[in-house]
Image: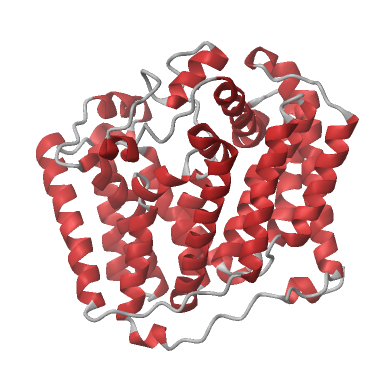
Length: 436
């Protein structure tokens, strides 16, 4: 059972409510006046604002607040996805019906993860050999094929050249899947392993592989991902996630607004508030509005549609369909998060199914975290956690490489007999039991 709410937890709740209030203020004084042309409206209702705030408080008390990987995932989704969704939805006159759907599936995820036990994952023979064979085979295939077909582009360090380089790349022999897996899963895994085990050769070698992949593909995220993972691993070893977010987010939003008011420069609030929080929330509602009135996708697009030859009701990718329909920009790739993607593919019933699938994956992450360490698992999965604010869970599993990450975590943890005997990490509970 969850421990009794402590004064420290109430301070965390207070910080998160300040964060929501800061988002509300930023929407009113900055986003609507400056970006009304992008359909940001001011149409609040007392009922929506009041009920949305109450539901966020309820969600906070059912939200798992320990340091397990699943809890960290839900905490990040709570502040990155659901609080901005409530802020925008209740202030912009968006569909409250869709908002209640989203909050219900998140409530379901929280409740299930409170009561479902961790899995006992049995190790397999020769897992260590299988791990290195899999990693080696993919790595050799990716670098040999991509170097032969595309070569190295030293001009990738010049940001004005990256788009031209990427437009000329070719991805033969399944490289459209394998290259993202290499850059988002395999190289970061080796790098995180080198960092955790204090093995400089492995750490530097993985960073060198990542740099080489950047020089081939000119994808900026490939450079950023490794350092983000190291930062998350360092942070998770030293701090509790939710209290840190409850302090930094309201301060960050407020600082961006003060900087704009003081200098007149809109860059900070535009990137940190509008682009990171408000626009993704708007897109989720736009997806709902479009697919409420038009045929749903039924997973006809992407890997599932290709394998099963499903009939696609639209001539182009759904994100571009939304960009054209809602913004009159056919070139715009208007991605949405996993809740909106689930609705677009199968309505509310599919939102529940995807929520259940996510719970299963999080239980699996928890079980792996017992063997590998929560900081290691959360650090490696952070990119996939955040990507669910912009894309679907099925896409993240296959194209994004989340399924491969789970497989590598299983194989490596199975091959490490000393880790298999390691007891579960104790929960970071000091902030929950402390006074104000």
